[in-house]
Length: 144
Image (cartoon, rainbow, N blue to C red; front, side, top):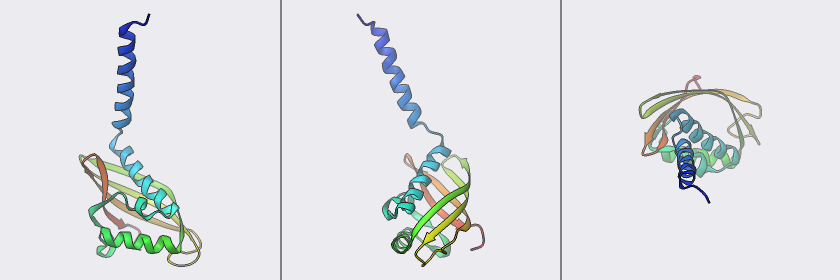
């Protein structure tokens, strides 16, 4: 016969494991959100690539969320894009975070990206909205 305390202990262990998975550090949550976007870019899935954009998103040259989606749509229709993360530093302060990135972008088939690799640096600003981290701003930090 099974002891009731053993069943309770097993149930508590399962609940604690589930809570630990849900209670990722903010840096890990941001990495996951960025990885979802990166995977979307590489697979050509615009919806996935833009899934973390905040409705108030701002990018280079005043780009808003709708313009960013259109840019992704145009780029990913023309190009097979590869994104390699060289460096990713994340600093979190409460519900806001900065992510400094060095990336190597590659593209095939001519168009917006060169055939060879292009090293780019970016600063991303994230904000926690509800339970999710949303990308509110993207700035090229390499002068391009």
